[in-house]
Image (cartoon, rainbow, N blue to C red; front, side, top):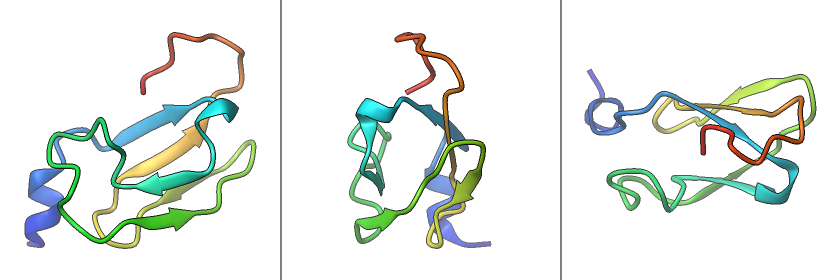
Length: 69
């Protein structure tokens, strides 16, 4: 098993449009420097995965400021 997948404790993040552009790892991740920063294209109504660690990201469908970031 890939050690990067073990180090990432949260596997899914729901982001707001204000959080774009998306890069992984996010600064709020427990071990934010676990792999090289990679920018990921994210559009509404889609879920994308980081090619390094497999963490998934999606955009919130609401304007709720209390999303899971």
